Image (cartoon, rainbow, N blue to C red):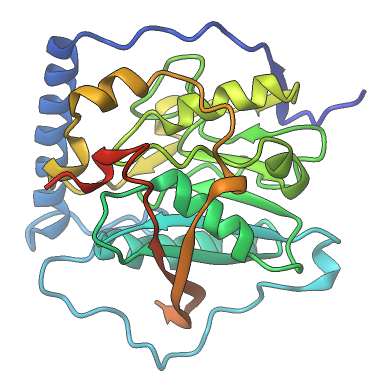
Length: 317
């Protein structure tokens, strides 16, 4: 089988144990200090003028881009090829990041002549954030005009135009490889940005819906890829290392989504053999076509349902 020169197949690894709580605390503290320092520089009037090739967060208090301005050109040019990408962005409240993400990704994909649409799946219920379920919703709501999807974090922007966002017909393509991601470097990591065909996503039954709060859902999905015997690919020939992506995560500490109770701690590393697309329960409250910085996107306001007998931690205060 022939593979793209920009993609390399990888072996599945045994899952590595997480860092100790002490090490995690140190990493989070350093990250918080770096984020605060970066935000101070980006919002300071005395800082050096922003580079044109790097996106900038909007300063506090600055109004969002005018929605009436002309849309950026091209998202569905048939001459760009037969495939179309659904960029699925699980979202809640992080509006400053979204204002940067949508126009940046729209322009980035246009330059690469990738037909696409951006779907922001906005969780509006009272439960804790559930990234995996929102990606499941995005997959189901993405329409018949798309045939592959990008599970894409709102706070991670690709800076290297050599990164491949093309159709992953040979197998899932992990764009945000642990060799390139600025934060996560363990070999079983498949988060951040992952491309899959819709058929491959269906083959995995999507992602588990039991991960309420932050983290662990990607690790469980890694096991699903392995169980489905899908070949995982990652970028090759990228020389920019950890500077390949810009991480624009805000420093806010969302305690409700970070907290873990005893039952959740026991269940978080287990495989969910049945859950996924087959038991997803949700309601679309609204679907809006909007412009962000002149770039089009679809905001899908979604209310998830929680089986409190199986996952009571969805309701932590």
